[in-house]
Amino acid sequence: MPSFLRSELILVRYPFSDLSSSKVRPAIIVNGPHASHDLLIVPLTSRTTALHDGEFILNDWRNAGLNVPSAVKRGVYTVLSTLVLKQIGKLSSADVIQLNRSLKRWLVLR
Image (cartoon, rainbow, N blue to C red; front, top):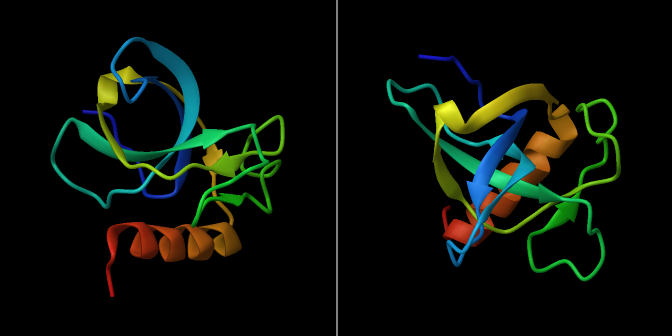
């Protein structure tokens, strides 16, 4: 079973929310270590305008392994680890803090 760490950036094939198709997109691993083939991910997008509550542009996108400015999108998906095509980087500490704030807000966690 491949090993993935929280806050790693990956390229993964994941479905559109209406399950009509899928696309290879960058995403962030948001689960902790666990013995499962499933991963919890948050999608990224290069569309950095008209963001919704809790969505944000990564401050350190280039050092995270991305080619263009990217925003964290609101949504948490479960995908099989076998759908991961490539590990591309890791979030900076500042971006991890912002992601944690957004996850708490989206999921109404204290």
